[in-house]
Length: 102
Image 1 (tube, rainbow, N blue to C red):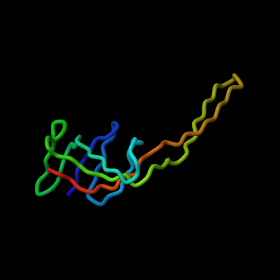
Image 2 (tube, helix red, strand yellow):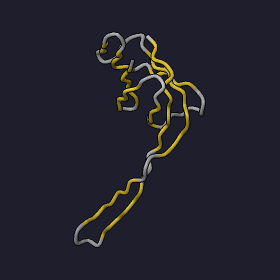
Image 3 (spheres, rainbow, N blue to C red):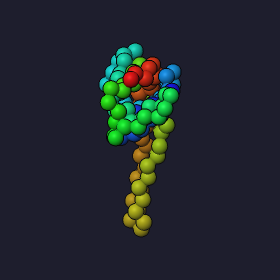
């Protein structure tokens, strides 16, 4: 059984027991988060919402807060002697999916 949830403009395919990375949440480690924007659920049959399913939720537990890989961003203007280089690390929350309800 799997579900497709939407969070922060991204869709994630999750199953109970999976560990996934979502955008940074303001929640303590060990707390429970409930997602109510569920786009699809697969069980005996596939149910698809328009755009979301009513009465279906996904429960997840916060494992830790982490940062992704560092990416480098470069700006360059030709013939202007202008170069700029910056780094960025996106912050994520790691979740363990506990149950798909409904």
